[in-house]
Image 1 (tube, rainbow, N blue to C red):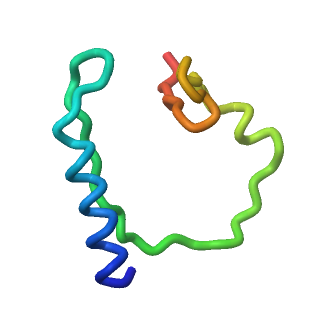
Image 2 (cartoon, one colour; image 1 turned 45 degrees about the horizontal axis):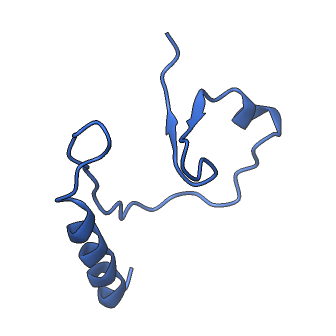
Image 3 (cartoon, rainbow, N blue to C red; image 1 turned 90 degrees about the vertical axis):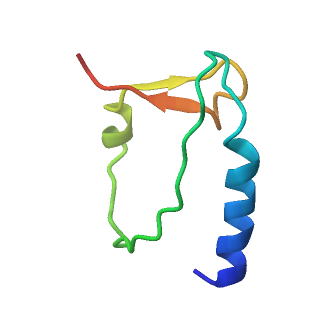
Length: 69
């Protein structure tokens, strides 16, 4: 990641961190600079097995991945 990109991302993170969510909990985020393998094939069934709960506001962007009990 280029230094300018890291600075831009860090600026956004710092703007969001002081805010609270609807449950009055502080947000937490970090920059993940890990390298990941690209080109992994995912079947159509695999995402359907995830326990995804969409948020009321823009659920297509805002969602939670919940553990199965």
